[in-house]
Image (cartoon, rainbow, N blue to C red; front, side, top):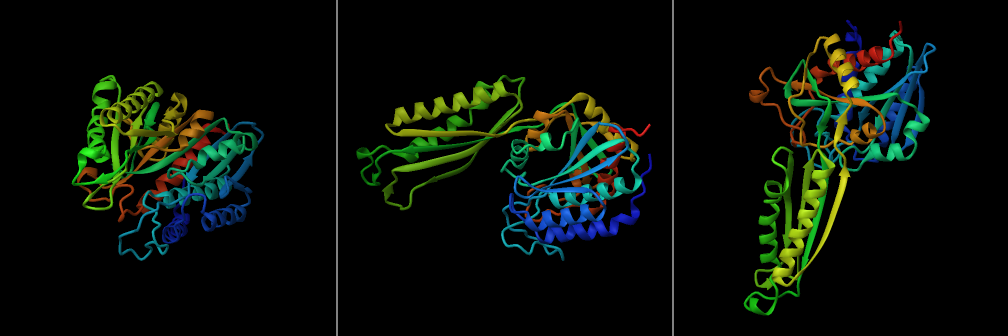
Length: 389
């Protein structure tokens, strides 16, 4: 299958770099959403705005079939400062498209334009431009506000640029492809006191240090060795003076896993560790444990279609050997409908030595050379899922 889109590329690259220069945080993507909605109207799609605040849905119908699919792109940026000398570097202080959602948005708009002019499908395609993927659960909000009631989809598909995968390659797999993401916050509280008189007050910093050590044993001692999980302590706070024992210290971190039973075991062990350390040190422990993203779980038939579509457009398509511990809120859509999430390579020929910046790096930039493959893949998915003949 050959899908000619070369005439679209200069405009898509310009659009992508404009989005990169004007990044917006989750649920604040008003400028981006306005650009998307205007572009969809210009090519004659039905456009619906306001789902999850800044979400945009473009609908393209052709033929008589009642079949329908959803193609999704995320629009938000990260709360981080860009450190690059690019001409299209972020102009919004403290906000950076460090994950490539600007590229995803440009590719899906390109696919909408291409499918609107070729119409080599029979059914309905919903182009889902989603806000707030970066930790705020925009997909969950869209589902809660009636995404699939208002825009029925038999299946849903999405992609993510993957710097660790060479340009021209694509991977996905049936079952889990991205991890569930949990956040924990533990507050240890005592009385506080003079640092020269530690015998007069429980030491919350000593308790904190011991608890951090215990937390890092949970996966090794509470998770089946045949399962996979990661627990990382990412922040420790406590104290304000060199001569004062603080009354409170906090620990924050994340847990990543692929199986709900593993989540249950890790959470239970974490709570038990906090309670035990608190008891041993004469302090109290308050634990908050939030499971904010479920695992991203692909369905088998849709994975096969996604890989076939990738091969159709000349990508080196293969089954991913293992899932990633990063998380993705496309998981909320996959809990409601079958579908597939694809990794689209944007790295060098030898990804291990390419020098490409990883996702969420302050100098990261989406590789515009991946745009044609993404546009073609989205189109091929629609044409395979909604065959015209």
